[in-house]
Structure formats: structure tokens, C-alpha cells
Length: 466
Image (cartoon, rainbow, N blue to C red; front, top):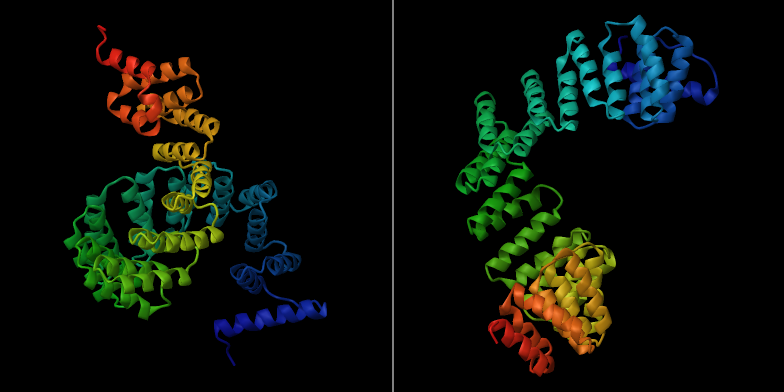
């Protein structure tokens, strides 16, 4: 009775695992060991793969393929020197084995020696009968070097060898996009579609290029063709929805996004976009319903929490907005977008201490927008923290030198602290930079603005002859 290949593999695997359990020694031919090792590697069972390799080499010490598996495992464990030494020994014996050069290239690539890796792969390409894998590896090495033209060339070759290698297709388009060659990408994809007219992935990519070029009607047509080619292609429905939103066809966008909810588990992106579309249509109740579904589906999606918070902010329901942004911060306390809103809401509620914490945290997380520094300064002044306000402005000046808005505030603070000489310096500096922002002194420091010494400096600036 003959066994099918799968039955044979299962039988070999069962015998091998039985041998391990009983500590007995059974004989396997080298091909059986290769199949067993390959199975364990594919399933992430590295210890068993190593055990099989060791036993395989004990029974078949001259097997090059088993030695290659051994090298592969040394590479996996980052023991590159050991792997390299073993490989050099094999190359002397088996100069025409392309797998040796591929593995050598792998080691060089891990050492960031991508140009040397390419040379090894070029040798492998001359030796191999199956070029696709080597072409793909060459494409990746050029990608590591950010040589997108050469990378694109090899991935195109790869796709020519295998028209269903969508990984290569995605990499080709990535290269076109990085080089900002969107029209060229469309031309290439159209040539590909002439040979493969029902390739949903290619139509999808055509649509994405038209979307980047803001040719929304052409993008819409491309996504429709992708859906005709595969009416279960979720990505095409999502992209079609985005285009319809750009065209302000919100009801149709909702329909497109809703299709995806029935094809697979709901995605937080689709739920968020449906909510946004309902918001644009003025249906606040349904908008809020979908925003809530979005954060229930994915509590880590910041856009969901922001959508709910902004919804209540626009309705001036600051207590509700604060409730939701507090929940968001409890999930991800390092999200700068959350802290910006936390600060803004507390400021609107006149909770100045909390607002100051929010603005300070925003700055600590690397958001150095001028407005953040300025509002934090004004909040610190509300709290009577004039020294902290001054320090805040000096920090801001490092990022925004020669900024009139900063200089006027510094002038006001120094005059407030009776440091008239410093106040005069910053006031003159501010007037030189932009006289229109003088209103800052008038609004934030009204008593200082009307004082004789400040009015004299202002008049002298306006009329230097005085």
C-alpha cells in the first residue's frame, strides 16, 4: 500500500516523536530528517528542530542539507561566527550549491553588510533553477540600502516569474511610492492588469495611487473593479469608503464601510469612519453610537477616544469630554494627543492646576508647539506661579527665538517682579519684532501697560525722534 506524501510525513513525524519518548534509536533517511526539521521550524518548535538536526547528522554526517539546517539554527540564535565558519567549510566542498550562498548572504545581511550580501545572492542567482526566491532576497537587500530603483527592478523580475507573488507586488508599489512616482506606478499596474485583468490586489493598488494624486473618481472606479474581482476584499471596501468621504458622499461611504462589518469581525477603523460620516450628516446619536463601538472594539485606538472627546467638546459638554479623555489617559498615559485635550478641557473648565499638568505633560512628551508654551505660561500666571512662568518662556525661546509673543510676556513678567531693566530689554526687543502683539501686555498686564515707564518706551518706539 502506497502512502501519500502527507501520510508519509506524518508517519515519519510520529516515529520520530515516539523515539524521543522511549529513548530508543530508530533509523530515518536524510530526506525524512529534512521534512521533520522543516515541520518543526515552520511551527516554531526550535528545540525539537535542533534535536532532529543533531540526530540527523549523527546518522547522516555527510548530508549537506542537514548541515545547512544546523547553520540556519545558529543564525536564528544569532551565533553568526559559528554559522559562518561552518558555512565556509561547506562552500569549499559544494561550490555549486546555491543554498550555501543564500545562507552566506543571510549572515552578511544580519551584519548589515548588504552590498556583500548582494554579491553572494548574485552568485546564487547564477546557480539556481528557481530564481524567484533569490530575486526576492535581492530586492530586500536593495531595500535595506534604500536603493529603491534596484529594489524595484528585482521585485518586478520576481513578479514576472510568479504573477501571484503579491508580496513582490506590494514591494514594487512601495518603491514607486517612496520615489513619488505615482503616475509610473499606475502605468506599471495597468500593464500588469492587461495580463491579469481580475487581479483585485492590482486594482486596489491602482486606486490607492489615484487617491494619493487626489483623482478621486478614477480611484473610485479602480476600487469598484477590485470589488468586482473579489467581492469579499475588505481592503477595497474600506478604501472605497475613504474616497466617497472625500467626495462628500457620506451615505454611500457608510454603505461601503458597513459591508466590511459583515465580511469579518468589525474593524475599529470602519466603525470610526461610519461614526465620522454620521457626524457629517448631522446624525449625532448614531455618530456617538459608532464612536463608542469603536473604542469597545479597540481600546488602544487613540482616534476613537479622540473622536468621542471632540464630539463632546464641539457640543461644549466639557464634563463629558473630560470623563472620556480621563478614560483614554488611564489606558495610554503617554499619548500626547490625549494630554493636549486634557489640558484644553480643564482650561475651559477653569481647572487651572489640572490644565497646567496637561500642558506640562504635553511638553514632556515632545509636543513643542508655540501655542502649548504660551497657554501654559498664561495658566501659570493664573496660578500665581510667576517664576515657573518665566522659566517656561525661556525654554520656549530656545525653540522659538526672536518670537514677539514670548518677548512681550517676558517683559510683562519682569516688570511684574520689579526687574525693570530686564523688562525694558524684552519690551524693546518685542516692539522691534512685531508692534502688533503689544496687545499682549495690554491684556495680560494691564497695570504695567498703562504705567509711565512702559508708555514712554512705546511712544519712543513709535516716534524715535522724541
